[in-house]
Image (cartoon, rainbow, N blue to C red; front, side):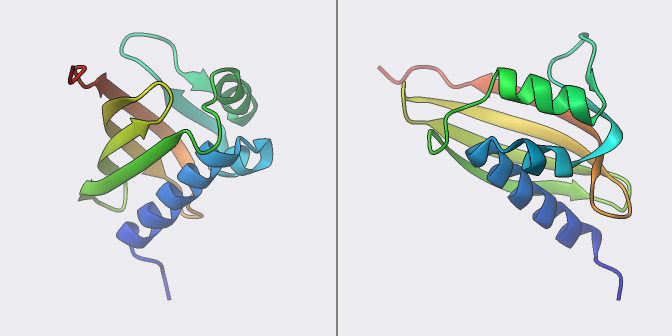
Length: 124
């Protein structure tokens, strides 16, 4: 029985959050194909390849337990998923809106990931 695209995306995002909260290089690396591209901001070069993705991720990692991430899918097809999320940071307190574009291979590893984020205004 072949896994449905929505189930593959759910599993991948859950593993991404696990990697985010652990900063474990093997967990991070397992999310991506060997030649994956990770786009972090418009008009800049993506991180290319699993090794660079892990290195760059760990170079700007969040501390385990510092974030809470909530999300829901906006669109899921066999080729691509678009996910909307909200990230709350504890210290210092701040909130971001997130939009992710995720392309997964047949094994559920990401071949291309694009993230956009916007910080919410300070409520004070």
